[in-house]
Length: 295
Image (tube, rainbow, N blue to C red; front, side, top):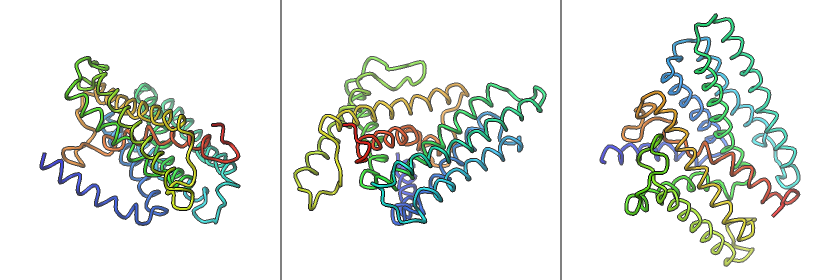
């Protein structure tokens, strides 16, 4: 327990510069999440020492956040309400081209390795690289376009995990998916969702009671939409945990690394945020952007 607390304190201390200078710190954090997670995953797959696989994948992990950083307003004064649709399209394009390059490189590497590479491992590595990268750069995009909602990327996983642990440890009996994660229960999952819903409702009530002049959120969806966002985001957080657990169980490991003693590796620590960030970005795009708002 003491080790976990010390690791958590060090981890939070390292995040302070990110929140003080988010426009520069967040892209660095995105690179760290992608590169660190890929190193851990390739080590588990015994692919890290194969430089013709590891180097291109790590280059991809650095290049995509930098390209996103350079193209979504960090060096320009952008009227978000006027140009966010264009920026979203640019964001998708920035992701699309590197992914296509990585896809064909992976296929060519598999072919020219003449059967020495496990195609199943390569396929999973490619899929996880895309999954992690989209999640990490979505954190950067949310801060740029929906900065008032940015902290929900961090709070939603924490609230869901806290609710699941508190409720599940006391009342949980029926296992959720014991073949993947023996400790998760159905009751715990429901508790995590309820905690998240309560938090979103509280946020909605407090913000709306303050009035337009002092409200801390510029735009809020309707009450029903807030509940839907809370439920969907909590479910995605739980799925993100289960995806990571599935991969670890497949490779027979407890944690991807011990870089944060008591907490595991980078992928262990950021798995839920990686999962929920792109979902929140899509939801915010359709509920908070004036020209797009469908709720």
